[in-house]
Length: 309
Image: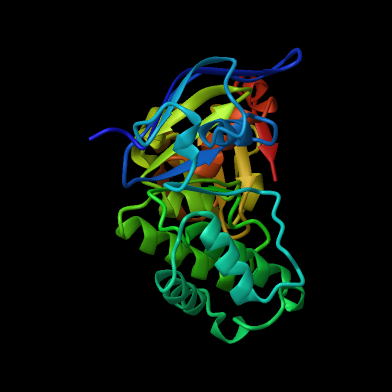
């Protein structure tokens, strides 16, 4: 089976700035693939190249087995980060319009509109005008508009941005329903917890280049078990002057420590200093991995111990 997306050596420049640099990436069909990276790293440029909104200066991009721009038509849907709806339309009329643009036909279209409004917990809004919707409601309506053509590939740019926890959970359930039905879902996010929880694989782009690509287990395995969570009576003071400590983050009820050396030596030293109620050796979270790659201070932190509250 062909990949949903195959990117080979893609490069995109804007003047003197190389937004994406010789990118290779394969997204398997039926997967839920997370794109992460700092602002300005090249995520949105990559998504727009996949959609053929812009074209690479070098390399090639194959979408659902097709290399030309027709790949971005009815089989693919895209929810951009910059969103907009026709405010004077009713929800029903708006969704009919967007669905017909993508080739959906009645009565399937009307049935799908009702289904997705129920999934999004908005059935009573079907005949209300869009300008009566809250920001979160409008965001969910635009998501519905992107799935009415039952796409084989769905690309979402920051879909959870601005949603409260309840609506974020509703959208999460909808994405999982699509994946279960066989849709390949690619989404960008700054929420590392969402990426950890949802994604089969995670791709990170930094300064236009791929720096991570794999499952969460594979990514964490690259960084080993150098993270230790400690709870003690002394709190942050327990680590003052200790060797091998490269970073300490205060998490409130415990401290998260990056340590190089034998954790048992650290434990013995801490026991001599204070009462220990928790000592857990763990892999770094995706958030920690992201910060290590994207924070320029991280490189210097390997040379001198740093306490960061």
